[in-house]
Image (cartoon, rainbow, N blue to C red):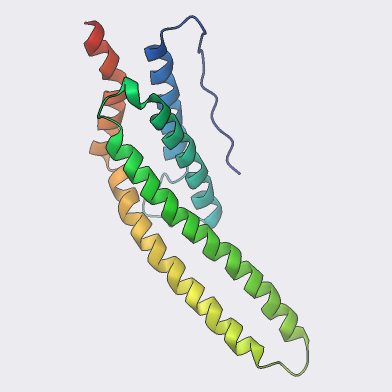
Length: 166
């Protein structure tokens, strides 16, 4: 499982705004580190790590939402939808592994039992569902990973408090 990046140089004496910026910057960096090449299909492990990092980012954004009025709502909604899809994908991966194990056990028996055709059908169904879910997630990810969206997030996190002070 993905370990969280440590938020560096946070002081108990620092203004909450400074700490909030550092937390969000770190969580964004961590989140985007799991699928860097959009032309490559990520492994199930990368997707799982992306989901876990997305949770950390979402929970941080939800906790800090009051400091960024109306600016984190879209990110939070996209993260929620992406997490749901990634969770469903992980369920497919897990269930498929269980069925594959059972199918392997059945293949060792002679003669091959008729249960195996049902299990093969289930594997195909999970493959199709996983593919459909991944396509839906890819659409969300392409929006989240778009350079304009990412640079807007960075600017929003960096600039929100600078504007208030200056």
